[in-house]
Image (tube, rainbow, N blue to C red; front, side, top):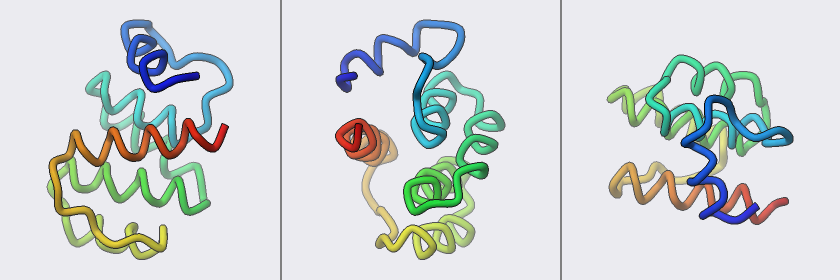
Length: 97
């Protein structure tokens, strides 16, 4: 799936089959459902889930909690625009296959 395919899929009612939990979280985030997004990120214990979890807490405005999750992800806290980070994470996760 390309980034463009992923973005187009957001017009649907549910994430496409086969998406990882972190990608599902970003899909729900873009749909405006932070709770579903957070639930998906929380259910993925690896570093990618932690990165998405950190991003979601930035969206929420809870920078302290975001910092914790960036640390769990092994990443430096992102300080750029939320859209920039969303794009970066989606591209990274899709490249993993």
